[in-house]
Length: 176
Image 1 (tube, rainbow, N blue to C red):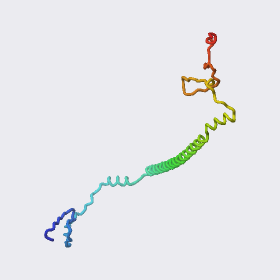
Image 2 (tube, rainbow, N blue to C red):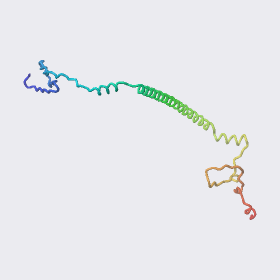
Image 3 (cartoon, rainbow, N blue to C red):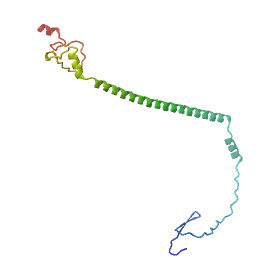
Image 4 (cartoon, helix red, strand yellow):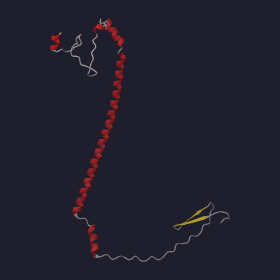
């Protein structure tokens, strides 16, 4: 070995690791000592144990039928599960296609609605009503204001009288 170089040897389970950067000469490894093994002696097993082992290896007809039915039942359950999963996948794909179609129809509907709204010009409608149809704007004496105490809109089934009262009781008519 070279002087001034450190060499560490670590022994682990009959293998040697050498740390360092120099090449070592091949050394002869000592052969592990072999001790003669003791002959394996077979253990004597009683007659009852042997009989029990033979019965455990033997399958009777009822057990075989039970195993066969269990296997068929498990196979049926697996096939049923796979069919349900395939149907679920198919329906999911169908829902996805329908959602895309709905989005496309909504977009088309919105664009058509916007084009219709853009095509209507209120000034043109007013000019046509006044010039071609002979309509005149309402005067201030023709406008009746109605206060709705309940909601945002009303359904008008008849004309609102000029007095602004929709109904009168007989007692108020007599007092006039």
